[in-house]
Length: 343
Image (cartoon, rainbow, N blue to C red):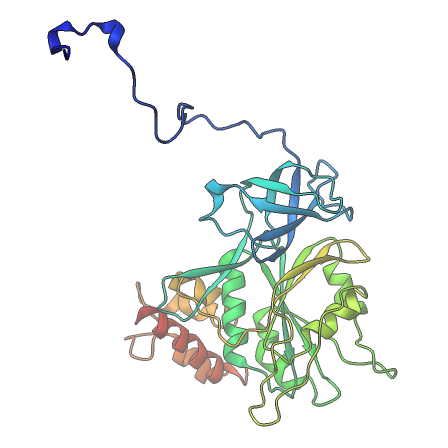
């Protein structure tokens, strides 16, 4: 005869098993404050390569490469070369070992770009860089003035020191590049070839020593050639310029960070053909146009510095030749960037 409801007692209670497991959930995470810290040097299809730091100043060692995956709670966070991370698990770097990135430490600087000036989606390129080396050729391919202006703007906005490394001086002189950017205060480093056909890297190596620097530029301008000269073991692929389009071919498909012989680290990035600035505050764009900044002191309050901005002092400043011979072109470039960001 079946038992009635009132015949049951507390002793008859049997809890249902938890379908998600018997372990209670907790919001307390493991403490990884003592986990070793390393710098990410490469990212490849879900695997991260890092080198451990070896001193109190946080300088990365040239020791074994530690292969890592990231913890599940970091799956939505971008981890890029230059990031300082805490690692748990096997950090020996031995073949077959695998560590886990459990924390990304705060970044000093972040270099990022978007697909275009209106795309809200940002792509982080590198973290914690001290210098942005914009590589441009004098010819084959011709200098991309717009891309250079954009990368300089991104560097100033990120608090990264920019400089120009100029290649292929055997094809054309440096004059046009120097004329256009000398007044900005950005350092220009010639990197032509010597009599033996090798890149002249002495001056550039001196600037890069003991810093974390990143190379950025169009495909075909010689970034990978410079990288191979500065880091002989880099083995970065090099390629020629397309004779039909005049553009370089993408020979580097991923960013990689390698140690320099004189101290410091250098990150080579894939060649870019666009550099969106949707993330940049319009007020910070002027920093890349140092020769035009003094004129803005005479602009009316809230001036947008566009061609139709009433009372903008930039026109008179450039007309008087106070921004140099390249002043009109530089002003047009500034206004093009400001217009894109405003639109």
